[in-house]
Each structure stands twice: as structure tokens, then as C-alpha cells.
Length: 280
Image 1: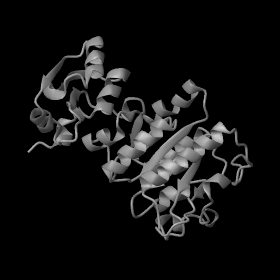
Image 2: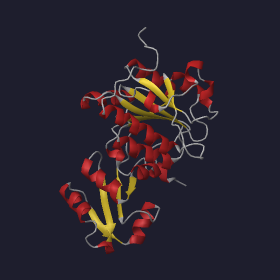
Image 3: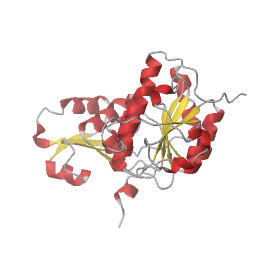
Image 4: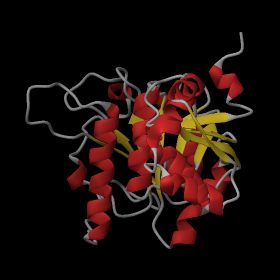
């Protein structure tokens, strides 16, 4: 039987107001059709107006039909058939910071497998100014319908590159002047503990200089950063916790760290880097 993910190679089903609205606003990919709930009256007038302006076919349908098409009842009365979101090339990502006149900020997900976590991280990344995201080709959640739905429209603006070897991709970003910042859980025996001795003592994020070009690397649920990926990092950071819960969910940790990057950049923080100058 053909899976929903394989069908998404030809047509992707977007469901929910935010994903469909952003697809219509951005016009980043072709939209085949927009359907709204027949009994919703004028609740989706803004979506229909955007579809009309963009020359996109639209119609009304019973809620049951929308649920069947979306594969879930959580569609808020809006469903669209769109072209699948294509992965970007790594070289495409490298050009984005220059177009914005900003120091590079990339997010790399080291085998994060939960689609909800990946989708939430993509949504946070777009909101906090990340220029692009890297995900491994294997043992990681890709741009499945679940991920697209959780991203709530962020994928209309945020490029995602799928790479065969994350370590090699990070080395390429180093060549372009990016510092590689690895995130680990506080006081936890993660795979990153097998990193070089200089990296085995993570810092609080506000003690690191996050104002320059960098890649934030988040590890997988449960296992953290893989040793080879950890050895690629220039520095490790960890969020100090004050409560009794042992660690943060990867999506929550990513949000906190990206916000710290945003805070430092907005305040013009210029601290001496806590790592050795690569040029020496």
C-alpha cells in the first residue's frame, strides 16, 4: 500500500489555517486547490480572498471530507493540496545570510527523530531569524506531512538542507567562517562526553559569544550529540536548570538557545570568544 509520505512526493496536503495562509502569502510553491469547511460561513474569508488574488482554485466541502483528506480532524476547517516542499542544497543555505546582511545563523539537527520536535524547531527557527536548517538523510525526521503541519507555515520561508554526512557539512560551514556550537544536557552522560577533553565542560549559553556567525547543533532525543558530531564542535553549551526535572525537551532547549542568540545579537554583545582562535 502506498504510504502518505510517498504520496507527498507528488502532492502534499496542508491542513490548518496557519500553514495554508503562509503558503498563499509566500507563493513559494504551486498550490493546486484550497478547500474550506462548508459550514464555516465567513470564518475563512481571508484565505479565500488570498486564493482568489493568487488565481488558486478553491471550494467548500463538508468537514468529514476535509478530515478524510487531511488524515486528521485537527485541520481547523482548512485544507490545501500543494506541491511538496523541496530540500535546499547546502550551498544555497550559505548564500542566505549575505542577502540579509547578517552574521550566519544555522541550525543543525543531529538525528532528531520525533516529527513534532522537528516541526516545532523549524517554527522557532524561522521566528528567531535562522537562515537555514540541516538535517541528516538517515535516522532523522524529514519534511513529512506531520513535520510540515507542526511547522505551522515556517517552511514557506525557511530553507532545509538534507545532508548525507552531517559532520562533513559542519566542516564545510566552518570553512565559511561559522563556529560550531553543540548543545548538551546539563550533568548528563551523553554521547558528547566522548568528545575531546577541551569540549567536555559545557558552558552556560550566556557565557559564550553567540553574536558571530555560527551553527547551533542539537542532538537526538535520548542520546544527544553523536561523538563524531561533538568532535566537530568548537564549544559545547548547556542550559543550567533550577528545577527538579533532569532535562529539557529538544524543541524547548532549541528555543531557549536560539532566543539567547537573538538576545546577544540585538544587544550587540561582543564578549571575548571562550575558545581558541582558529587562525592561530
